[in-house]
Length: 347
Image (cartoon, rainbow, N blue to C red):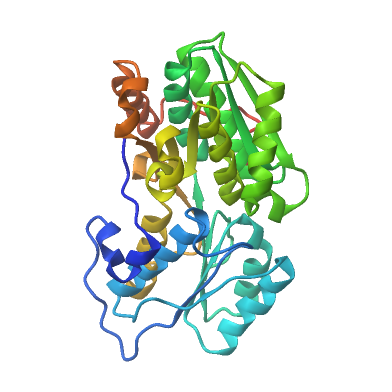
């Protein structure tokens, strides 16, 4: 499967290695002040928060700013505006916020502070000083669905999303179903969500995620491949999958690397280039070429993909890689629909 480079939080100081064709260091009177606000949870979540932070450090290193950059982790959503404002009050030049959950507060701050640049990951933007990074998750989900459909022995696969309010989660899962059905129109794809309202439960509770997956698998005994779209909560789902001898599909980053405890059963991961997109945007801001608004990262930009797991190569039938590559090329060319009309909107 198409593999995209990832990085570890422990390697943030050397994070420039994640970028393809990194720009030269930008000369400035003083180094840019760059800060990160994550979503609720932890920065070392082996997923969304962490790889956004890694990208911010990569961008900072590329433009001559000391790393690691400061990172603020909220206890709950009420902290979002407070933490963003603290960076503004301290004269920061670029503020990176991680996740769609921070979109509203990031937009407000951008409008009120036109001299500060904002980068919002999984967010849309209409402001000239605010770059909203959006990703074509349906494309990544489609590719993962191909792999899952090829690997299943029962003809029943599944996906569990964190929260029904999450448009990226919807895109991932709808693409996953379409990709699976492109392999086998009769495949059974069962999907559900952990919650309708609780973001902490949705994305930052691996214990609850494991229990949810156990209950789900008990109710759906034919499922033998499970796609988790639930961040750290989903890491608990992968634990449940492993313990039952089934196959899991990771999300956002290559989880066979980021969560080694479940690598033995993580067949593939639907990925998006979180670190690369953040780092590239910081470089563009420093270089004076950034343009505010929603910036979509898709297959044409290597913004999405799937990561293979060599340890489970025997579980993937011959010819799967060729099918993934052909589908990726068709996506990049804009000739392969990967999302139904009601798919969650980008930005």
